[in-house]
Length: 356
Ligand code: DNO
Image 1 (cartoon, rainbow, N blue to C red):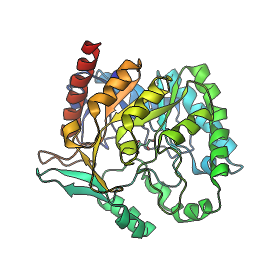
Image 2 (image 1 turned 180 degrees about the vertical axis):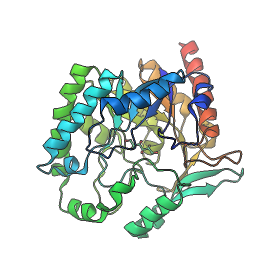
Image 3 (image 1 turned 180 degrees about the horizontal axis):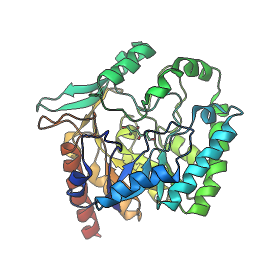
């Protein structure tokens, strides 16, 4: 297992590489060329510029989160072939730069969403939270403005401004796309890129839908054990794997995340893990608690043990943290609580390893 932290390049992160390097056990960062719009090629020059900066701080760049998929691929439009060709060029360039794992998602129109990016907790920290009844009443404009306004002036992953203009039209488009058609579009994409991933020796790790409930009637594809299984069976290669995001899956009250970890790690299909905890306040509502098992609803020890016992040898990162100690930064991606999360993961990993 290799422990990494998410980091955003181009000076767009309150957390510095020097600080990340001082977190015990962290070997590298998961990053994303946020400057390049989905669908465009990640050139060797751009990749190397970011990689050199990371390496110069004694850290590795082996995980990309995310290499985003152009909406035309998700929609299955004729232009998808051009965007898939570009995607493959980016994959080849990343492999040449030493990248071993690519995280991505197939969520239509919008990536993750929270109805509150700064909910106060009784201990004085703030965290991200989700209230489904509130969320379904909101207009698209209200949703996008709340994500922009709550972002503390940092770009939010998956909420890149270039997406906003087309969101309304895209939501309309998907109202006429059947589940079968959407899955056929996924398969078309996977059948094009997975053979290339095999040649390049890189793993592909799909991120679950977050939250796992539909908004604007958009298709949800990866939100429980059955849908993960369906998704991974679309292309049987080991390279076609999962980002086990415990918080996204844990938000589904009926999901047993330990069972999911066991089921897919035992098939060698878990390539990347986002470890965080959630506390439900109702069947659909939750807030992101600190990483500790006792602070949320997930048994983090059992999840880590399931990964270990099934021979997991991919990447783990502490996922969203709360904002503590007065820190101001990108919601979910401050330094302090994620560093506490990293220390906790190190402890859990050492314990499960020594237990054998
Ligand atoms: C949010 C993240 C997501 C994730 C993408 C992966 O904080 O978990 O934006 O990186 O869905 O493609």
